[in-house]
Length: 174
Ligand SMILES: Cc1cc2nc3c(=O)[nH]c(=O)nc-3n(C[C@H](O)[C@H](O)[C@H](O)COP(=O)(O)O)c2cc1C
Image: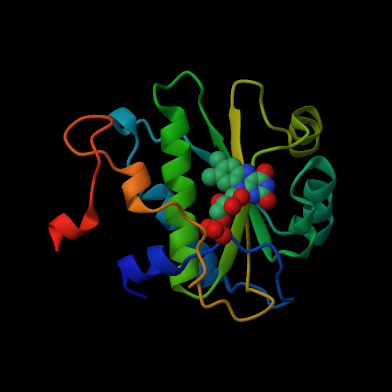
């Protein structure tokens, strides 16, 4: 799928079919994370690929707003190094690249950041020195998603022209 169309149609998916994601596509998703640029090229993200059903169930228990992970094909715990400047942005970019790559191959994904941190560190052996940026959850959508119903603010509300507070009218560009 063309990049722009992928961005415009991708929605977060939380209901998945039982179809598993093939290994070659999992590799593409991981490569998308690896290809992501980071501040000073620090490449400080670390990824825990979770595929075992029992582990996905454990992730569901350890989440507080991501119980839907238990039906997924896989999940990726994204860790960043809090000692690196802009690690939050680095993690977010890797998450987005993985989600967009998945969507371009018709695989849905969602993420959660609200979780029981102590339980997740214990159950997945995550070292204290790493920050848990997000858990990204992947699977084929349970039903067909057109991606046409995005709930987003208009450009006029989020774009300012030349300085903060000066109105922007998209018609001026067309
Ligand atoms: C930083 C961040 C944290 C999020 N945390 C959660 C979460 O804990 N649980 C959840 O179900 N979705 C979470 N989401 C997904 C958002 O709810 C979703 O991106 C937003 O509603 C837009 O969804 P849409 O693209 O399908 O319209 C998070 C997204 C971001 C970017």
